[in-house]
Image (tube, rainbow, N blue to C red):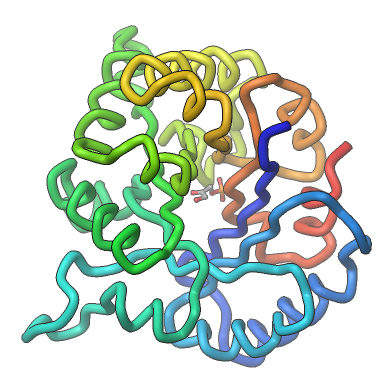
Length: 250
Ligand code: 13P
């Protein structure tokens, strides 16, 4: 049985008080003994608070980004050793919003991934095609290139710590999720490619999440697919009732 992961990417939302309320409500609503990894990725300023609030619960905390160097004159950046010193568990790398608005490319993402692994942070590596690419029929080529560039040089041992998130860009924040079949098709392809590059053991164990307009209404049908091992949730992770329903998918 592969690990099942539900991760909430809060993006650039919530005040500190709202963050405290949301985390507290999520912890209170979790069914005991649920065999799932739950990850909350609040904005950087709330990571310390979040780590304190989840003490004694099974909830893990992730950052939404990190810088590729450990230390230096990089005004405004946050590095892996800083996150490690907060005992942050996960870090999102390669989100399409970072690729698009901050021009992060494959080589930079690869450096960030290696830095995360060096500091024992589990990367959630995001990839996915844009609408135009899907319409042109190049989805598989696009995601294969993103996979190769982002994960280049990682050993099979490294790969066992990585989580992949397939997030088709056209489904993010649009209310238009990929159908379970569309997500399954790409995620099965990704698992096959991972098997080719890093071997069957990695392919069988690596969790591949789906992200893009995941909601209480569609989580069960998405999670029924064999190659969907969880979800990376944006908007619906900002409301405790919605996120709790998603965590407890059937
Ligand atoms: P939405 O769930 O708001 O579509 O966002 C998905 C996402 O980008 C998660 O990283």
